[in-house]
Length: 305
Image (cartoon, rainbow, N blue to C red; front, side, top):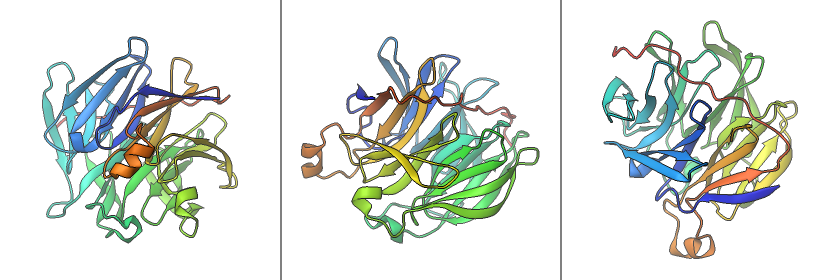
């Protein structure tokens, strides 16, 4: 196994939301407080970006063309070439929230959540966020309320289970998932780091699954991505990075056998940056011996509601 720095200091603030686009063999990711969407081509080394008018929490391709992104409190459609942005929905009216992580389920719906203003004591943040689902007809519904920091999402290979992270209580949840309706139920706590050492276990953040069904979870403040068994919830393996603010991960590369990992430099102290100067970099892990699934894309309507 090897850990490589793919792009040094790729994100000036919070690198997040890596998504491997297997159509173009490029990696999409965001720099939240730089309001930027990046597109990285590992073959050429080219890293392009588009800057929008608000914070960017996530980005996923749309099957009908372009990208869907969470910008501020809005879901928008972006045409990369023309840079045209079309607002599809706005949420959380009257609240100081923004979209954070988001992904598509196997049927092509978008699931994306919001969070309130970050605080130094993250577990004490107010739970004013929600998890939303953008259905295939283009309508938006609220699925979960009273969320602190809406984060990682993943679905089991059989499509019957959804995994979801709220970083504030330091927990990952498991839900029964009905793919035909997009409904969830029977919530259980799958991973609970609430009583564990912060430097060792951190805050669960973004995540992905491998083809063996195990969960790879980025752990903010711990320097690690941890592989968990989805059968027992127990850690199986960890990969350590020269940065403490690990935000998310996804499998990519032409064989989907490389783990791309985003990190943050946002609010890192001068002392921390001296110790970990690669904070904010994009990393790539090779030789893990496992592969990921092709990432789902938005299959639905792009009509403004």
